[in-house]
Image 1 (cartoon, rainbow, N blue to C red):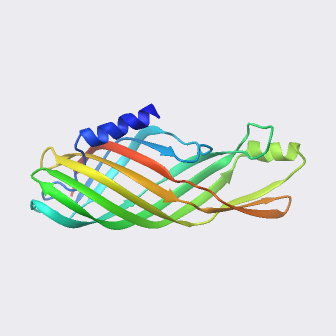
Image 2: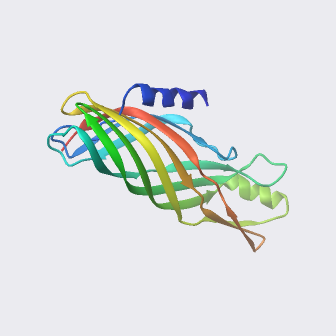
Image 3: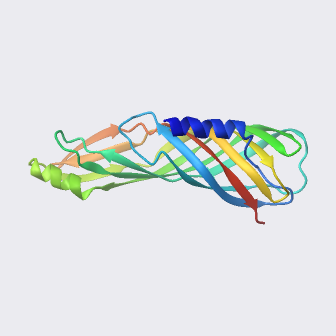
Length: 213
C-alpha cells in the first residue's frame, strides 16, 4: 500500500503526461505503475513496469480548453485463491483485457496539459484453473470441472497531467479508478454456480513517452 501511495504522489507532483508531442501522431514509452484492488482476496502485482502509448492529431498545440477523446487497452493477471476450506491452493489466474474509449475536458498552457476523462468498454476475461486446485478438490472428494469468466463491461474515470520536455519527449502520468464486475460460472461435481467478482481497483502510473511518428 505504501508503494501505491508513493506512485500516486509522484503522478500528481511530477505534473505528468504528454498527451502528444508537437508534430507527432504516435508516442510510445513506459514507466512505473501501481494498483490496489478493493476486494482483498484478489492478488496481483502491485508495483511494476507499465507500457505507455498515445495517439494524437499532431501539429502545433493551442493553449486553452478542448474536448479530447481518450482510448486505452489494458491487461491484468489476477491470482485468485481457492474457495476450498483447509487448503492454501490457488484456484487459478484470471486474465482481463479491457478496451476503453471515452471523452473528457482538457486544459493546455504551454508544455503543460491537464485532463479529466471517463471511459468505458468491454473487458474480455479468461480464467485458467491451477493444477493444484484440481488436486485439492479431488483430495476432498470433489471435482472442479470448469471456471468460466464471462465478458463484462468496465468503466474507468481518471485524471492526468502532462509536460512536454522536448518536441519528441514527454513526462506522462495518470490516476484512475476501474469498475469491472464480471460474472463467473463454476462447475463443481457437475453442478453449476454463478458469482459476480468485484475487480474494482485504483491505479496510478508515471513515466516517459517518445514521439515516433
